[in-house]
Structure formats: C-alpha cells, structure tokens
Amino acid sequence: MAKPLFNNHPLGPKDKPMLLDESTIGYFVYPDATPETLEKLDYSDLNRVYFSTEGLTVCTMDIGPGGFFNPPDYHPGDEMYYILKGTITQYCPTTGQVIRVKAGESLLIPKGTIHVAYNFEDEDLRVMAVIAPKILAGQFFPTDIEGPKKTFLNPAAKDLPATPAIKDPKRWAGLDAVGTWPQDGEMLRETKTLYHISEDRKLCLIHGNMHPMLVKLSISNDFMNVGEYVLPSGSTTCRVSDMIEHVGESFLYAIDDQFTVYLPDYNETFIVYPGQMLFMPPHTKHVLLNYLGHKVTIFFGAAPVKE
Image 1 (cartoon, one colour):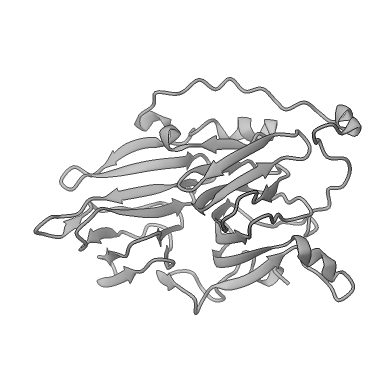
Image 2: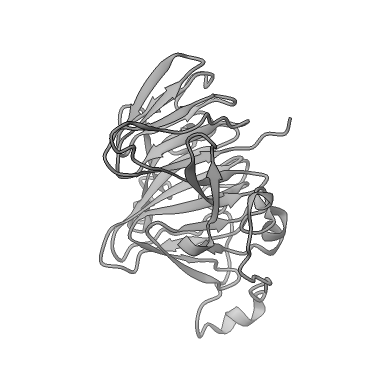
C-alpha cells in the first residue's frame, strides 16, 4: 500500500538535512490492487517517493511506451510535473483538456484537478512530481471520482462542463511575479485548468550579486516554488553561488550532473549525484558549488510558509 509513505517518509524527524538515495526511497504502484483486482496493475505507474511531509511530497513517476495510469487521480494540493525523460500527454477527463509536455518542461495540475497521464511515445517516460501541501487528505485512493469522460466523439461529453477559458497573453515579468507564476494559484484552482510551462514561459531571474546564477522558476505560488538553478562552471576555479535560504522545507535534485552543497550552520558538505536528492528543513542556509568544467542544472523546490 502507498498510504504509509504519505506525509511521513522517510520515517523519523525531518529537522536536519538528509541525502536521499536508493537506500531511502520508498516505492509504490498506482493504483493499489488486491488479490482479487490484480488486473488494475495493467494500468499502473511506478513511483519513487524521495520524501513526503505535511507540507511537501516529491516523487518520480515512470510509465512505459503506450502505457497510462487509471483510474484518474487528484490531490488536495497543487501538483507540479517536471519531465525528466520522454513526453507526457496529460488529460483532464471532466473538461477534455489535453496538454503534451516534453523533457525539460513543466506542468501545473491545480488542487483538486482530475487527471490521467499517458505515454503515447516510443520511449520511457519519467516525471518528477512535486505536491504541496499534501498528496492525500481524506479522499479515497485511487480516486473516488466516477462517471463519463469528456473524450472525442463521445455523446455523453455534451453533459460535462466546457473547458474554462483563461486569458493568457505571454507575460513580461521580473521579480514582482514571484508568487503568482505562471498565474494566480487560486484562480487556476477554481477553474481546474492544466497549465503548460514550456522553456520560453519559465520565469527567469538572477540570484546573487557576488556570484550570480540563473534561476528558472516554473511554478511560484502560495503552495510552492519550483524550478531550476543554472550554476556556471568556474573555468580555472570552482564556481560558487551566493547564500540561499528558503523559509519552508526545500530540496535539491541532481538531474544529469553532480554538484556540491555546503551548509554553513552545520559545517557539513554533501555531494549530490545524479538521481539523488538533498532534503533541507526550513531556513537551512546553503551554498552551491560546481567543481565540473561545464554548467550544472539543479532542480529545486520549496514549500512557502506563512510567517
């Protein structure tokens, strides 16, 4: 069962930074099955839970070529997908909305939005999913939503609501857009609209004065901030970031290259290798270091807290 992994994984206190790897990852398939309902596993995905707290859950989802998960899913928090490999086709059965998102791009699934993920490609699909605040809080699992789906040439679709229309001009934006990117979170939750963040729609910012690096935010709202740090190489010396600190729980994930993290308050250093993740409790000060001869892209996320 997946439930024991939710909101408290890994087991124990989360008051210190933790390096998360194959020895700590929890696994589950969706949907759950019983000996009497094993056929459900024909339409399942494989999930790796890096960590799950009361405020943030981070996991990966794997779907093979031609596969999809069923029944549809939804969560009591926003869910963000970052595509690590392949192309996902995401579908909302109540509105008929379909979005295709390729590797390096992101997708926002607002709180309560029902969704199904398909892999219509010839290659494996791997998605990093970030859910805030909770992955599960009272609804049945799998989803308790039943009824007709809005699909092409389906006569029953006429009785379902229309896909909501959102005015969406390309925004020129800077630091003032932090907290409302790509749109206001409450508005997207009300309309149950899937939102595609392509590379050219990420909110680009600069972090640091002495040691600048590029920040590409995919999502920044009242539930989460998620994006990429692009840390340049240092040529003949190491390249280092200015100090970073998030008010909520946060994480750093190595996509393709290793990177180093120094935690001054702990006087501790971590090397994060591809596929590994560093979890940090609120207000963990950290510095990123790149000892490689090329730039490093680091996937990061944080759960905002009200202070």
